Image (cartoon, rainbow, N blue to C red; front, side, top):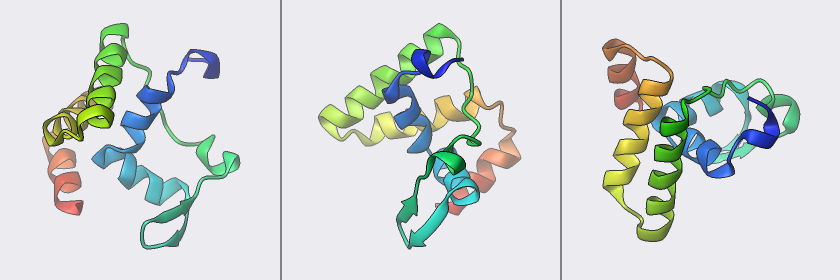
Length: 100
C-alpha cells in the first residue's frame, strides 16, 4: 500500500484503536502520560495493516461517525475491525482489553 493510497481516516482509526495505542507505546517516544512525539523515523516503522477495500471503507465510515457523533459504539467497532485486520487471537484481544 503506497502512502498516496492510504486514507488519513483509515490511519486515524488504526492509531486510535486499542491496538494502535498499544503499538504507539512500542514505536513512538512518549513525552508525558498521554503525549507522544510522532517523528517520521518512528512512525515509518509502525505496522499498518493492508485492508481489503470493504474493510478500509468500513473503518473510514466508523471514524467519520466517531468524529461527527463521538460514538462509543463506533469506537468499539473500530477496535473489533482493527483486531480483525491484524488477525489477533482471543488471548491477544483479551490482553489489549485489559491494558486500557
